Image 1 (cartoon, helix red, strand yellow):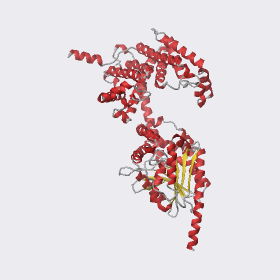
Image 2 (cartoon, helix red, strand yellow):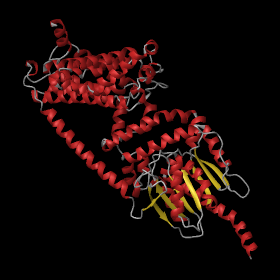
Image 3 (cartoon, rainbow, N blue to C red):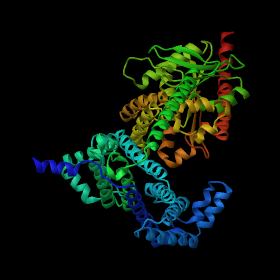
Image 4 (spheres, one colour):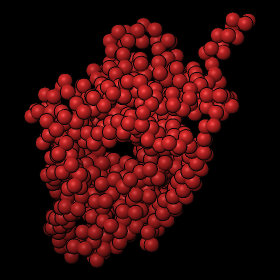
Length: 626
């Protein structure tokens, strides 16, 4: 029993290190990271020459940063200048490996941290997370060396320790969003990849699946529960820190991530120092105010995030000053906006947005149509989007959204007016399916880079990208539900929209409701599209099919499927037009002012053409009546 107790006490408990020991071990491990990094770049200088991945004149063409920043980067990014910086880093890193506690070591650490950050743009490929961790540790240890106040040193050590805990926890909980980590297939999947794979490890994982599953779940538990090291007087600090260290060593050996080993392990001495109880002699006098300050800041950030999330939810739900509501047969309440148009004899355009998209995406187009034609316009949010409420109690399928669309058009558009459906992406497929129910009232359909029900079967690209979409949806739903929308910046496509709708669109983008609705729709899309039987019914209506050039260039099969959509409309008396919008991609077709304005012009021309084509038939009917 005594032997067992001795073993347990050896394997558990805190790892007592002093303040100076934590700083010294961390700075030396981080110095090894910088030394390895610079030696790698110096031995691969061909990559900095023309044709290499790190050729600066090629990398600098994107013109990012301010003029002053670009001048600085140009100064240090020449082949000779970069080599000189790396040789200096090698010398400083080697010096930091020597014994001693002198304050000059602080300047050396700061130099390594600053040059690592400065060279990040220069070495964009291959740095990944190891260099970022090195900057964190080197900056903290450098400032700690230069400071003479133990309180300041403790605050810096706490800062790194908290960052280490955060990195493990976030990594672990993000892994939990992936089904491959939950069902323990992630390990074998990674080991079979070309970039990070390792054939012997892959074979072992396949030969011993139960052991591989336990190892995978063990990694998840280690990362998700890493802060447990601070509980119960640091009883679990030793196994958790040792487990994390073994995890990084295994990654270095198996996945070839050598720099990650010393980079991440360099944070562990700080974790050991801060997780040791203050009653232990080695950490006597430790100042823990940084922990309390961090907890206070975290509480304030959580409160602020909650307030902002509530404000955005309210802005999402409230709609515009002229929004109205309609309840469908499935008890869903749809929020919509309508303009009658100048001529009651003309069709009304009903716009159907894509998945995880907003009705405001059509603003450039609808504004042009309202400004330059007399056609009426209806935009709406599907159930669960914006201010529309999802109340259906039946299992969701796409037919429900089609029914909602039909109910909306019948309830909103006057009975004496015909309808033209305009659908983007999934909205195009919903419009196509609604055609049968709308019958003679449907004059035409405008497909804007539309989905095709067979695309997941026929397009390798669509099928492959679909695999990661569930992870994206789950991540967004859970992150936004946790109030992390405060961390999102406005995407470029939001800034490209008209100024009067950007705030509301961004509120929807950062609200979990839209992503929940998108996840619900995607489950139905994947189920129904993969089961498609390959037959598209004919539609007795005019059609305009618009394809984005970047979509069809990236996947030519998409153009074939768009042509098939057009073919379903061909027949006597039907006007069918197809074109590819040069330069546009799937989103900028709507959000880019130039592209969307051109789309609006084409839609107006298409409507005028079918109006002219229908005119002779109207005259024949009138003459027969007379």
